[in-house]
Amino acid sequence: MILNLLLVIAAYLLGSIPSAVWIGKRYYGIDVREHGSRNAGTTNTLRVLGRRAALAVFVLDVAKGFVAVSLGHFSTYMQGSDAMFTFKIALVAAAVLGHIFPIFAGFRGGKGVATLAGAVLGVYPPAVLLCVVTFLIVLIFTHYVSLGSMIAGVMFPIYTVFVFKEHSVSLIVFGCVVALLLLITHRKNIRRLLGGTESKTYLFKPRNGRQR
View 1 (cartoon, rainbow, N blue to C red):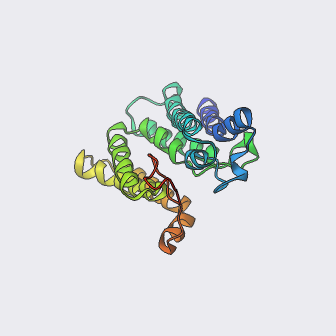
View 2: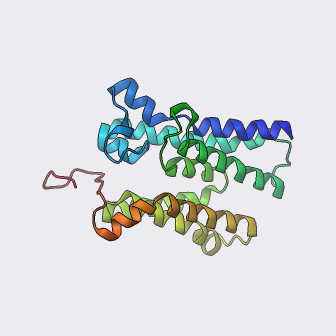
């Protein structure tokens, strides 16, 4: 019991690693939380510091989520059991909570999308890969990172049930919670999307050379 609790705490600490903040301060002398959307995540890092920094932040955030869930292998639960699946969900929650409220950065973090993706990848990889493709398609055609993230999250439980034919109640409920979490953390983005004021992000420089 104590070991499992320590693993959850470790998952939170991993999630708390503020890659965007540390990279911005160490290599650019900038705290990304003081610029742009004031969010310590990949998208704001891209806008404030550029592609190289954003790629590093994205990779590190995904990795810390995946590693956090992988800590489940050290738990006392049997691999493949319902108890192990439930425990992995707890690790996902701890890692994402750490990213949103990082103890190493004054509890001011990001929205946890990349960390959530990495963590869920450790729970059910096939559906996550399809969600990544979905995210990229939406981003390429709309240039809205927030919209791509939300649609990819909503599609996770749908892919799980209708593409991979999974009927595990726990997995379906988990997928729905993931989708709901993304919608909740993007509620401000939803208002901006509806109001037509959401900022766009271009993977490639637009022809007119300008970016909204």
